[in-house]
Image (tube, rainbow, N blue to C red; front, side, top):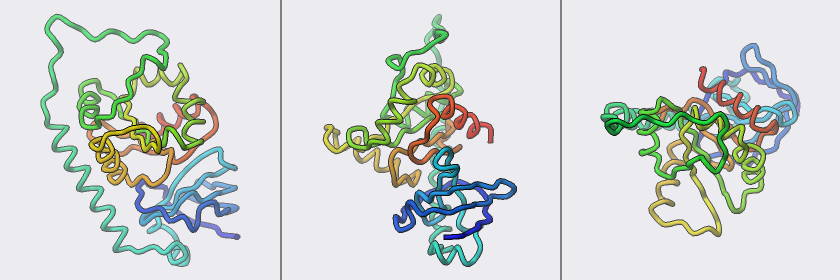
Length: 249
């Protein structure tokens, strides 16, 4: 299918529509950036998500920035999209009120935080399941928060990315200095209590995550800085570079 898109890259997800998944596009243009060898991952109420360069990179674009013909093709509904964006804005504002104005816990008298070692091992990392607590810790430490939306016991691409990236010392060392980590798991066989299931589903709804793996980087107020949808090759170096790009926006 020969389509040339003119779009503006942006963020946001809701209700991925699978009918366009794996569709191939030869070229996709975003501003002055031109992507080639496109594979559509998902289309939502607000965005189209895709890989480019035969899966070597990932990006997304707002449907409202597409041509009228492509908006019609992707079933873009401006009313629904506006409601989604408003809902996300309200959710972010609520988290800002809770987190930004919450008093930071003082460090115990006479104690100082240990300096991280030159190399951190994956066994030293703490993947929390309490998002609110992790946001508060990120505010205290001046770090970002990485959410790993995964199906840890059934999703092959999640497991592959864990092995190639998240379980490496290179990523662990970077995370120790820059990130607080949250595991948002949707297992099929691992036991999980109802409260955690409900909390994970709420996070998936808030950040409009519809597929796994999805890695969402947020600031200490819970505002999204960027995301990677699906597996990406390149190992820890490429993933860290992507996180750095998100944080510098």
